[in-house]
Length: 196
Image (cartoon, rainbow, N blue to C red; front, top):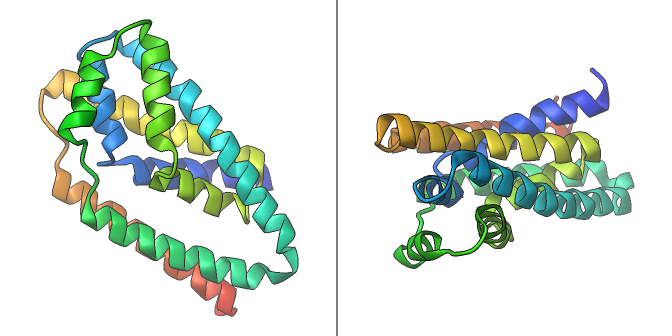
């Protein structure tokens, strides 16, 4: 499979899983209760595209700088993904202060949502996962895929929140996402060691 398409599909799946149960989904539901879902999705998409563009830039630079050490990058990336598995098990909740800011936000919906998501995503696990993927995969495919994965996960939260009026089954999502991160981490470590 072409490097672009592989990176696109891989990053879409990984970031979609990373976003499940993340505080960004809770923010998306909160904003959707105040603004039109379309405006919330536009704000999320713009903010995500900007944050993930910076992320793939960082990842590409790291991958390029250490190109001769790809096996070590794979091992470190695998360890990072095992850390993401633990981070996912720990959980990520929207604090009351963050929820209140989302409820009180004024101004144009797209700007309010975009700015809130931009700031919330800086240093978040989806940003770090995007950086990690971009160290080894096509940066354009990773950028587009990570943006699509996050927007899909947040759109799912908006739809489920609006239609069902209740939370996603948190335990199933938490453990499922953690297992997928751990498996991906073990695969990367095995590739770096030369077992795959």
